[in-house]
Length: 117
Image (tube, rainbow, N blue to C red):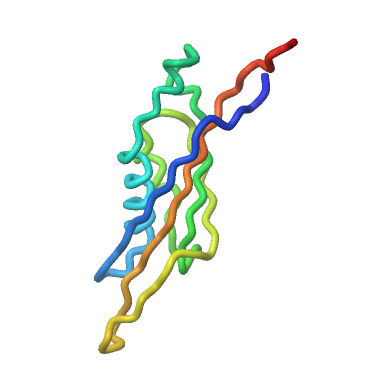
């Protein structure tokens, strides 16, 4: 079987007041998931659980994200999460805190047989 990329989904999430990087990451993942409806599993006759999802998160403080807390967001499939430096952190005017923005890219794969000519 060959792993084939079938879809890419993008999302953005924020934590306006609490600087909660995991919460902002969760919102970015949900944004990507809930703006799309993938019927790829059904179209190819695969169970949805066979879906492989590579998640890339761009976060201002990658070490502050609890990846294990994000996995239950996925209704099916096998997700792997990679966090790298990215997103935005915008300081509040009084300098007391900042708002956090996280970007997410979800790449969906299935193991599929190669077509032979």
